[in-house]
Image (tube, rainbow over all chains, first blue to last red; front, side):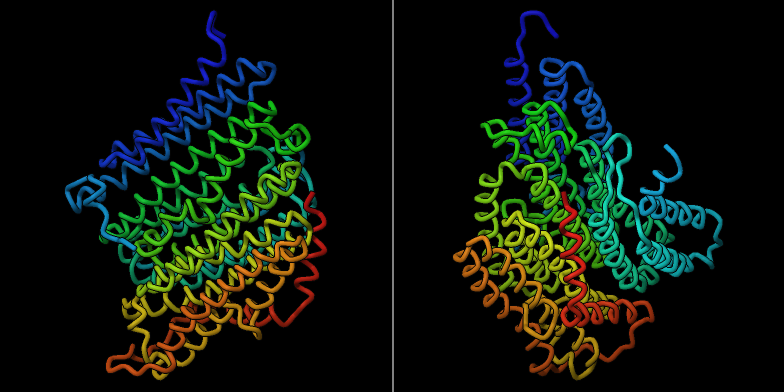
Length: 105
Length: 475
């Protein structure tokens, strides 16, 4: 717990992180930026878990453990996404969403 | 933890062992024996499927993180059968395309890891296991979608799947964290007793729903479906459309019917809205598709809408009908996908126009396709009719008459586009029909299993009775 900072401020920060991520995911034109936005969403959730655990339910460490798993899985996810992006880049020499998309309804 | 309790993990352990054996095979097999990986996988997996039908005790593991009972065990067996059919149907494609590139065993290992994730997902007893199962099942699938490295569309499908699944799981995680905030636990059993209705839980419920809605491809989260199905290898697309969707439906049902049962009047409305949207959107978009894979993608979105009709009830009858419908859906959709796979492997053609005059050159294949499509559309003698009929009965028994009416309208729309394919195959003539070809042995076995399944499930009623009897054990 941090002196002088209540749970409200911390939850506000994590919620803002989450929505910045969602906004970025929708508006960004570059695959790498989209990936970064997804990371922001995951980090928002991870911060949420830690804060809730620390402030509301400090007896059991469920939230802390959960956030560690989130970080690990997010790393795997990013690695896979990056490798697909690299493979795509080799073919079309671009990571712009516009140029990646060929299939349309 | 003694031997008895470890045996509760029997299904998962045996999948893991198969995957490890394939890794070892890959190391020690010479270049000429590499093709053996296909037969090895299929034989091992058939063995695993057979052993799966042995009795399993109920119980909890890891302090309640992992649980199993008769219903979960039944559903794991259903998934096993589905994956076995997918493996049989993709065998020929793997032999021709992947084995020369020395990537045959990778394909199977990734597919089995994804199945492992799904099995953990449906056995999960807390959110941590749930999340890990969800990710373990999605990540290999993204790699599989991008598996044809030399085709641009495959990479496109992979990147679309991984990015949208990451978004969906991120939103789900945020929802889980809010649920954790309101109850102070991540275990399903404790959460069921502690959860109460307030603004925080409502928001948590909606956010949480995103991840599963994504896997089932319900309407606001369906954008990836058609593109991924079109770009990904057909075996992977059929896996996505039946196995991963079926497992997600099952865990959604378990979670909402047990843990969120006190909030039923909230999620009833959510399901109502999504069912209507999903059915109409899936069906209307399916009308104008020419590519068979896209066509089947939108048809599978529409079918997900029908499944929601059973989920909306929250009763034992709902559970039984949904499981029965998913079982039938697995067989019918795999019959359709199997034919598309066979034709695509042989000739590379995937358009509906290429199917014209198929009956004259390949009568057996067109009959299988017809049976599968009839079952998806719900025409009486085949199983699909009973599946839909029971779903509608379940919804009507709770008084959702208008929803059932809308669903019937949708069945009519869907009949039109399913019959378009049948018409192309049987009635149209073509100057350049697909020439006659003989399928490989594994493909034939795969198609025969689906046909037997479609016919047997519709005509042999004890299967439904058995599922209904087990549905009482859900809680």
